[in-house]
Length: 248
Ligand code: NAD
Image (cartoon, rainbow, N blue to C red):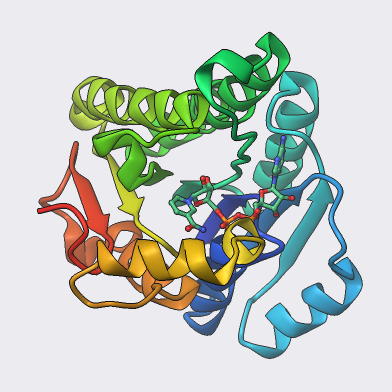
């Protein structure tokens, strides 16, 4: 087993922000562990793309972050194959938007289950190995709406605000084990999650962004790379907005 090569685990890393994070760490010669649920991505093609970009090795597996058994199996495979997980990015997330009075219990529960409970389950499983290694960096995907709230997203914003509390608590718990935990709070990023918005909705959103544009998944990946690596070794428990100035 090659102990020099670092390993990153990215949940939901087949598209959008997660895929850009995978490419960024691949370019820096990491081993990659990626899971996803159903999506249109051709996973064999993606695996090839990541290897061509520089990844040492890639485990790409269909596994649901809300299923503790599936996550445990995947993490065990990763440890057996690579020996350690240096960086964890809790990226998998969904939206099921609706106004409060129209929101069903299912819509509320599902978003909390994937975004918040999924982050808890995966962090608990991976941190066990980071504690043994006495080293690690965890980056959780929150959102500006977890800080500011947003009409039509009470489930999603509650899950993302929950991630902020979770990040700060785990940062305090794990600091003595040399494990850092931070959150990034992206604003309006150009991915599948935002592509269905109409042009008029997008124009209205741009008016609230001083930089007057959407961010790219690559810009978020650059920040996550900084937080994952030792260049950010004195930063823990922070929530870093990446939103073109939307929230100041
Ligand atoms: P996306 O919809 O493009 O990709 C989401 C990924 O998560 C996919 O790979 C999907 O397979 C995976 N996924 C969904 N449910 C899963 C589950 N139960 N188990 C495992 N994987 C699952 O999303 P994105 O826009 O790239 O967003 C990534 C993260 O960033 C999310 O947590 C999202 O809430 C957050 N975020 C996005 C934006 C934005 O504007 N796009 C803004 C703020 C925060």
